[in-house]
Image (cartoon, rainbow, N blue to C red):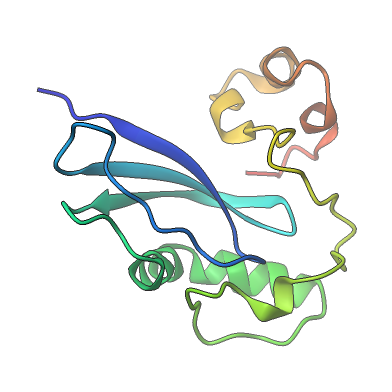
Length: 141
């Protein structure tokens, strides 16, 4: 039997969330689109135990999967390197985005990882309604 997968977004300039299995499920998985300054860094599958996944454990798992991408983004912004990710997020990623990326609001953030499934920019424009995701460079995750 297939288990439900929660789809979530995690912005590393903010405190990390507590994640719980879907209603009625004892355990599960969350697929997280992880961002810094609104810019997608990658997808991370997070196991959700019966009590849920706390922010500290979430931070450890995200860091173990995306530390190179996080470091590269911060270095590209001229920000100080970090050696870990905590439940409080990345303090260096708070405030205005030095990289010039728009800070997306919770309701208007496109999910390019869903749209970019090997079908190119046409599919991205169709998924995003021709909005900001359509103008992102092809190298965006």
